[in-house]
Image 1 (tube, rainbow, N blue to C red):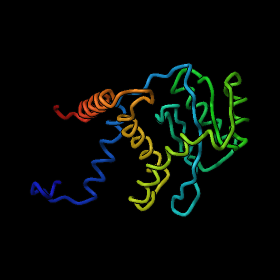
Image 2 (spheres, helix red, strand yellow):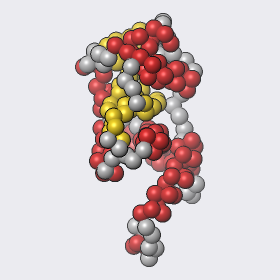
Image 3 (cartoon, rainbow, N blue to C red):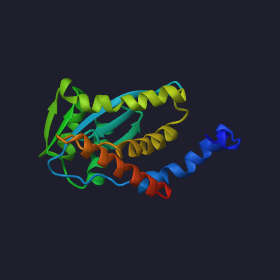
Amino acid sequence: MLLERGIVMSYETIRRWGKKFRPDYARRLRRKQPSPHDVWHLDEVVISVTGKKHWLWRAVDQEGYVLDEIVQSRRDTTAAKRLLTRLMKKQGIAPKRIITNKLSSYGAARRQVMRSVEHRSHKGLNNRAENSHLPLRKRERMMQGFRSVGGLQQFTSVFSAARNLPVPPRSHRSALAIHVYRLQAMAAWKSAVGVLA
């Protein structure tokens, strides 16, 4: 697009712009208000960074909205507990229920952090979290992998904030209501990046 306008620029310049401005844009985007009726879907996915395995732990609510992501080098109770405590700090209230895969670390971490929350552990129930990894996997292939753990953490936090914006609530809405919701999302994006509508 820039070349079309007569502006010649390297990929490195665009990468540096992204690194400089992405976190600020992500902070400006509005966040979904937490509710005590929320259902959190928790999942982890392995990502190779410079040949070493790292785990991207993710929490998604019942509408597909990404609540938080954290990159860790371990897949144990300590890592699950870190995700849950970070979620509790960010959300401020506990959910009605958490749904996970069969990894036993979630149950142990939940007993330490949020005893009163119902926990369901079943592979088929956790499809919402599993499907939320797909856009990141597609982006990872396009970028030919990640070069550092810090870069991966920064990228996922910004990528999720931008992807959350046009996600309409999953209710029985008309096509017109979804269209209006997406127009509002684009207006919010333009105000976050400072573009005049």
